[in-house]
Amino acid sequence: MQLLLAAVVVLPLLGAVAALLPAPPGLKGRDPGQAVLRHGVTVTGVVLAAAVALAVGFDHDHPARMQATTDISWIQALGIRIHLGIDGISLPLLVMTALLTFLCALYSYFRMPVGPSPKAFVALLLVLEAGTLATFAVLDLVLFFLAFEMVLIPMYFLIARWGGAQRQYAAWKFILYTLLGSVVMLLGLLLIGVKSGTFDMVALATDNGPKAQLSHTVQLLAVLAIGIGLAVKAPMWPLHSWLPDAHTAAPTVGSVLLAGVLLKMGTYGFVRIALPIAPDGMHTFAPYLAAFAAVGIVYGSLACLALARRGAKGDLKRLIAYSSVGHMGFVLLGIATMTPTGLNGALFANIAHGLITGLLFFLVGALKDRYGTTDLDRLAGRTGAALYGRAPRFGGLLAFGAIASLGLPGLAGFWGEMLAMFGAFRPAAGLSRPAFLTFMALAGLGTLLTAAYLLIVVRRVCMGSRETAEGGPAEAAGTAAAEEPGALATAGSEKPGALAAADSEESGATRTAPVIPDLARYEYAAWSPLAALTVLAGLWPAALLGLTDPAVQQLLGGGK
Image 1: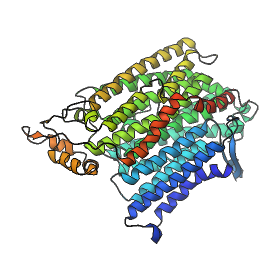
Image 2 (image 1 turned 135 degrees about the horizontal axis):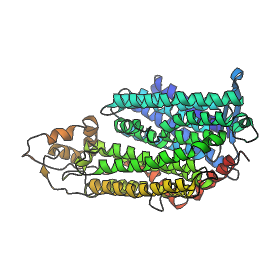
Image 3 (image 1 turned 90 degrees about the horizontal axis):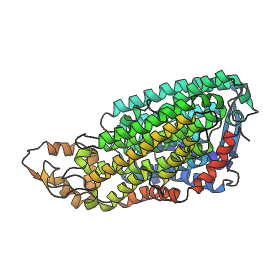
Image 4 (image 1 turned 90 degrees about the vertical axis):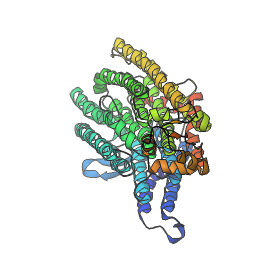
């Protein structure tokens, strides 16, 4: 178990280095680019297998105990140690990270985003995986910060070099927001380490440990500083504005990993660091965190409604990005309640959001490849996508993802949101119940608004007419798609403005709606696990709650 956890963290780094080296003669094949993409699939597959083996070997009877631990002195003068371990809180996030990265590598093997060398792409993807896995596995505050920062550079380059329109602006906005938040967070982590005399997260989480050295003022300052850095990554309103731009510009796999993994690093930090190490400070700031979360839920839903309305020229990727602001608001609300119910809901919602939103970004990326745009007005036009008629399996899966995202009972999205609101109904002792009831009501309003905009999106994108209309896409695009299913996708990924060019042609021309290929085999392989896990988590929530609840109870009990 100890070796498995170390391998899960280290193997992606070794794979990244190997990806940059010349391939051995026997592995080059006819296409060196495809060879390095196969390397990415292989490495992420091995990491996923190790993570699954780790989950199978995990002692499920004692999920609150740190397992597979490694504790080695690293920088003795500063008391920094290479301390790794997992419990019921971190294990699900670790496995989900390994799964999503493998699925992204598999998808990229068949649908590599347009950009520079595949070598750099695979190396960056593996470094990103190493940083996220390390964030969920390390138990030292300094190592947590290093792992937390490790993901920024790979994601910056994935957006800046393989992204779409305005990718440079989006990449710089992403890196500036997150770096500035991280600088403030580092001050809070150092304050805890200096005042307590240790950076060990396990020791700091116990009531009779070094945490006793932290005064109320120190805890307030630490939570404020650490919370700002974590809130930027979460993303919490009003520190969220980098997210829609980053998602809109990022390549498909970048959006999947950004939504499915990177956002979880911020909320995980609240649960693993702020709440157990500085509970007094967290108790003081909890109402403010809940207020920002509730506003974010409503704000994200209203922004999505504005993008979904007819004539708004809304971008579907941008809409799903704003939906993440609302969904992560439920996670932050659950954390702010400081109750076992709320925290379990937050952890469940973390996993549900990773699975569902990861699937949605996969689908929207594939829709852009097929159709050449994610503009909702174009997708909903007379010659729009009309997925139910042209690609029924694709349309059915998109509708499934939307329904799961709105929190339909029986699917994964339901349990996290419900438990977070239950936690707000009866928050921890000392927190204002009338205030949290107000936040719960706002969250409930957010669920109604979420259902509204997602059903509008499904109606506009999945339903429509196959009749010809003026100003539609060029007939040649449809002919090419009919002859070769991958042709339209390739053309769309290379020339996302093709549809606009066709629309700008002579207004009297009659055009044929494009033929949209239905799901390919590699898309089934990459997306089916996410859909299956969404159903499994919705029908059998005890599988996840049985892991998180004992760990949450111990965390709130001061390590007892």
